[in-house]
Image (tube, rainbow over the protein chains, first blue to last red):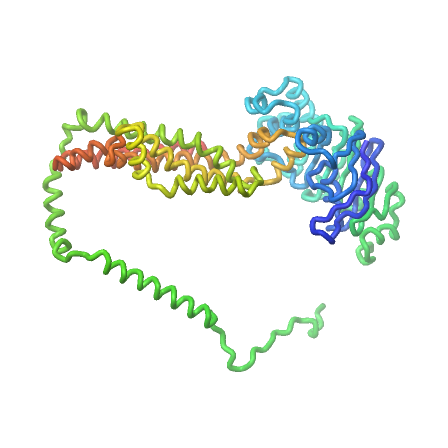
Length: 249
Length: 276
C-alpha cells in the first residue's frame, strides 16, 4: 500500500528533520506515530501526500513513487489519500454539506463544483457520512458555528468523502479535550475498520496511542526508534522515544 | 522553589545612571525631522506667494457669490440637470463594474500565495500602481482625446482609475486568507480553479463586496466632476453653468451632487449591512 524508502527531509541544508525513514504500511488498522515535539512526525506525515516535499527518497503508493510526481499526476494521486488536520482546516464560511463536498473537488470539474451541481451519489454519500459521524441534520449549518469536536467530525467526513485508500491524520486530537479526543479517535478507528482504510495518525498522547493503535511507530531525532505493537511500549522504549525519565512517574 | 536564593535578583543600577526615553542618535533624528517639517512649511508659503489684497477681499467676494446663487434655480432641474445626473450615476456604476472585471485577474496575479512567482506579482503590482498614480481627471482627458467627449470617456476613466484600487485591496485580501483550508483542499487533489473557488473565494467574499461598494461610492463622487474635462455627466452641466455665470444654476447642480452623494452613501451602508 504505502512504502517509504530512505526518506530524508531537511528544511535547512545540514539540519535534517527526517533521516533515512523506512516504513511500510500494509494492512488496515491504525498506525500511530508518536514522539516528542519537533521530531519530524508532522513532516513525515505531510511528506506522504507531498504537502511537504522530501529532500530525497521514495514514497511508493500503490507502486507509484509520489516523490517524482507533479502537476496533474500528483493531484490525481492525492485524491486517493484523505487527510485530517489538527486545526480541522474547514472552510469556515461554507456550510457543513459544502465542506463535505470539498472532498470530491478532485473528481468534479471546477465549473460543476462552482454551480454546486455535484453528482447525486456524492450528495447521498455526504448525507450518509453525516449520520456516521453523528452530525445528521447539520448539513445546512455553517462550519464556523460548530464546536471543535464537531468540526473534526466534519474534517473526518470530508476526508472519507474522497473514498480514500489511505487516511492520514496530523495530530487530529491535539486541539480537543480528553473526552472529545477519545470520541474522535473512536470515530477515526471505526471508519478505518469498517471501510478497510489504513489510518496513519500522528499523536503525542501515548495513552491514546496505546488504546487505539494496532501498531506504534516511535520517532526521535528524525529517525524511527521503535516499531511494533502497543504492548511493546514499556518504560525503556518510551525513554528511548521521548528521552528523560521524570515524566513517566 | 521558595528558597530566597532562587528568587530573581534585581540588578542595581549604578548611581547616577538615569533613564532617558531616546538615545542621543534618536534625539538628533527627531530634531532633524521637525526641522525638515518646519522648513517645508516655510518654503511652501514663500513659493505660493499669497497676494494679500485677494486674501483681504475674500469675505466680500464670498458674500457676493452667495447672493448670486440665491435663490436656487430649482425650476431648471427637469430640463437641464436630471438627465446629466442620471448619466453620472450610469458612468459610476458601469465604470465600477468594468473595473471589477478587469481588476480581479490582476488582483489574483498580485497575490503571492496564489501565484508564487515574484516577477508576475511585481508585474501585477506595476499595473495596479500605474492605474492609481493617474488621477481620474487625467484618465478622462486621455480618453476624451481618444473617444471624443461624452459618457464613454468618463466610464473608461472611472474604470481605469478603479482597477488599481480594487485590484490592490482584493490582492491583499487574498494574501490574508487562512492557509489551512487551502492546504486541505490541495491535499484532496482539488484543481487550482476549485481551490480558488472553494478555498479563497468564501474567505475574501465579505472583503470583496465591501471593496466594490466603497469604490462605487467613491466613483459616484468622482464621476460628478469628470464633466469638467468633457467626459460626460453632471460635471458638464456644471461647467457650462460656470462659464455662463449662471450662479443660481450652479447652486442647483451643487445641491444635486450633494443629494446624490448622500443617497449613494445611504445605499452603500444599507447594502453592506445586508451583505456582510
